[in-house]
Image 1 (cartoon, rainbow, N blue to C red):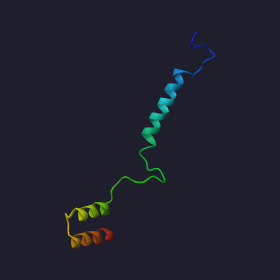
Image 2: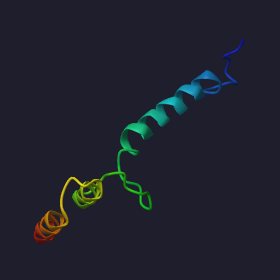
Image 3: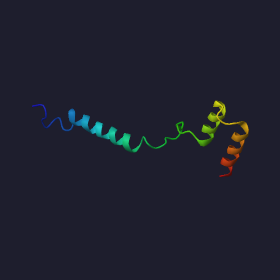
Image 4: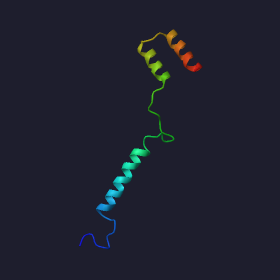
Length: 72
């Protein structure tokens, strides 16, 4: 008798509880920013710096757009 009175929610039942807990943790907790974790989102200033470095915009255009961002 594998699932007798002495086994309760052990064995495969415990596996399913852990699986559900991990699934709910992944859905509800991980999408939020964890304190101390580096953000992966690029800011507008980061994109502007990359465009300047790639030569897509001039230095004057960079400074103008950067000052516009600081005003807002």
